[in-house]
Length: 75
Image (cartoon, rainbow, N blue to C red; front, side):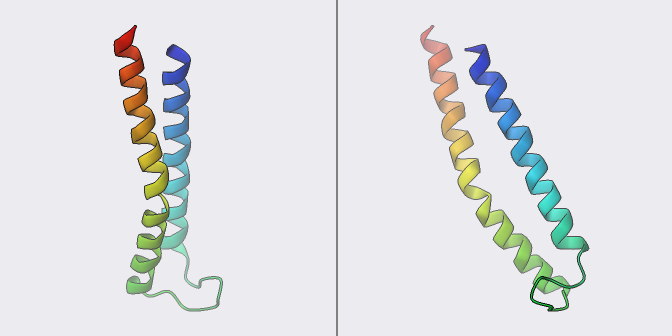
């Protein structure tokens, strides 16, 4: 059981770091990959796309959390 919780926390930390780095990259860049100058509105749209992309891992982590809680309760 302990290994499940450790791997859950490590995975959460990795996802958080990836999201933080992605957010910093989106907000700090002046020009995107297509050569378009980034305005605050375009940066917000890029951040929302990043947020939507991270919803799937968040859902997986919540399901994994529920699994860990139920597995721990059965022992």
